[in-house]
Length: 228
Image (cartoon, rainbow, N blue to C red; front, top):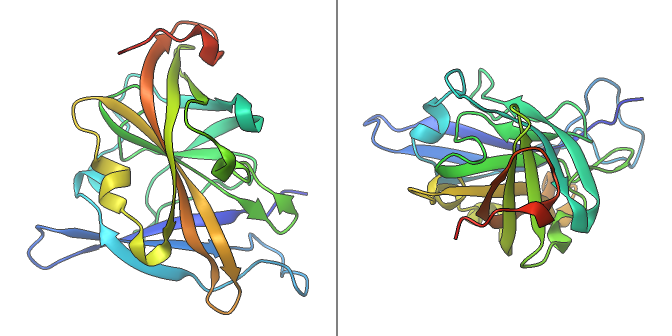
C-alpha cells in the first residue's frame, strides 16, 4: 500500500503592487485517500507562516531546461530516491511528491548544476512510518549529496550547514534565491516538535550545500570534480 506522505507546502500571494511575492510555508500531514486510523498523523490543518519569496521562484518553468534531476543519493543517511517534478497547484501551493519515498524538485527554480538555488523537497514521515527525508536533520557538515541528471551526469554537493527554522521564521528568500551566479542545492523537510492541535510539525529542516562539480556517469560523491 502506498504511503500517505508528510507534506511541505508553500502558498504564494501577490501584493497589489506586484513588487513583492509572499510565500506561506506550511508543514502538515495529508491523507491521500483513506481516512486515518485513530491516533495517526494525517489530515491535520496546515500551520502556515509568511516569508518573502522572489517572483522568479514561482514563475520559471523547466520547459526549456536542458537537464532535469532524476535521482538523489545521500550516502550518510542511506538515501537513494527518485526525483519527481514539483510545480504549483491552482491555489498556488507547491506540489509535493505523491510517494513518501520520493523526493521532489521545485521545477520553477534552477535545476541542480544551474546557477542559483535548486530546491529539493521531501516528506519526513507518513502514516506508515519514516519517509525519504526522515534522517535529513542528522546530516553533518562535509557529507556528500549527489543528484543524477537526465543525461546521466551527476551533480555533486557538500553539506555546509543544517538549520532548523520555526514555521513563522522560514527564510524563503534565502532558501529559494540566495545563491546568485553559482549553483547551490537546498534540501527541505519538516521537523521540530509535532503539535496535533497546531496542525503538525512546527518547524522546517533546511540543509544548505555547496556545489563541487559534475561527473559524467557515476553517482559516487567521492568521484567529484571540485568546482572550487
